[in-house]
Image (tube, rainbow, N blue to C red):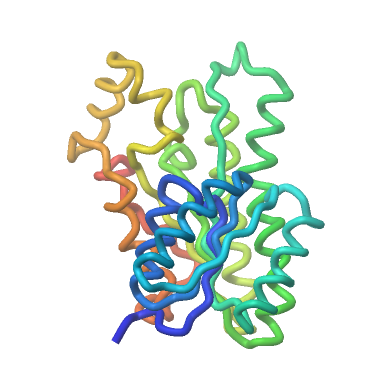
Length: 248
């Protein structure tokens, strides 16, 4: 039997990268997918892929930093699917710059999308999940949260905050049957393009990964299926690293 049969899953940032790969993989396991992305066309393309494969999905467009937009989408998804069982928060951006060159605007924008956005989407679903007595929250973080990242102080700070938020959610929400976990991946996606497009920087970065290669988004997707499924029911407050050994 499919591991996510009849489950309703919301994926933010579901139009590309790991979010897209995760949405396709969870749909293949029987879930109905609410694909949310600030790029409506990208979300719609993923929905078309899911439907072509025989799955059920619908696209929504929203900015994860807007409580009004996210709250409206959550209400519509619940009306569409009956309930929300899982939220996978994959939406994120980067703003590469050394700290000495980084502007406050860049710092605040990256933190807003990556950290504040995590808070917004999580808290939008807490009332629904407490009433339901169940819920699974999965947020993407990064090795930068544990190791720092040259040229990515804004991103590293935001992703470290995501880990702390996930752990806080785990201890606060367990009494309601809600779990919260983080997935820490390294993958060749748009988010890592600034590293991969610089040969010297990429060589140095890959030298820090014991497996000496990038994962594809599809390499990461099975871990999202695991965290969304009943297989992870006794996990909460965990950070699951799928990073080729980068954070060892």
